[in-house]
Amino acid sequence: MMKTLAFLLALISSFGFAQNRQRIDSLKYELAIAKTDTSRVLIMAQLCNGYRPSKPDSAVFFGEKRMALAEKIKFPKGMIRNTTNYGRVMLDLGNIPKSLAMQFKALQMAKENNLLGETGP
Figure 1 (cartoon, rainbow, N blue to C red):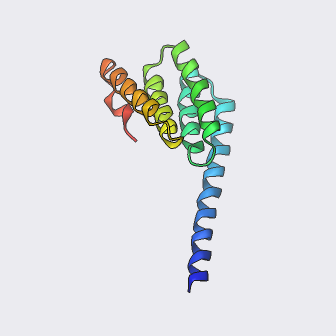
Figure 2 (figure 1 turned 30 degrees about the vertical axis):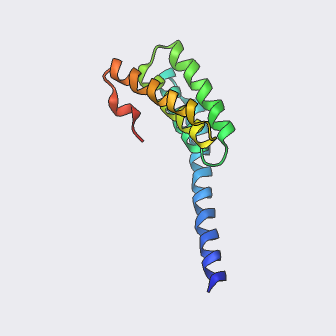
């Protein structure tokens, strides 16, 4: 009975990993063909979230690239999403003070730009 349960759990987790891998590959392709910088920022936000569970270093990489681009093009929606996601990555890495600081920063930017919906999950 325990072996069967362990097998089913392993199967379910590998299925989720495969789906996440396909999603990441698809997002990388979308990023390569994106025509606008705002699209690139939003795709990198999805990549950051996709990498969070398995590769936090890659999530940080895409978060930093996205923030630089969002700030360069003055794209508040992208900046808010980036700051929120980056805060989640910091939480995943155990850096609670930095995570809280990033979440509060995102909330402040969202209030200033009337984009409170961008700070949610």
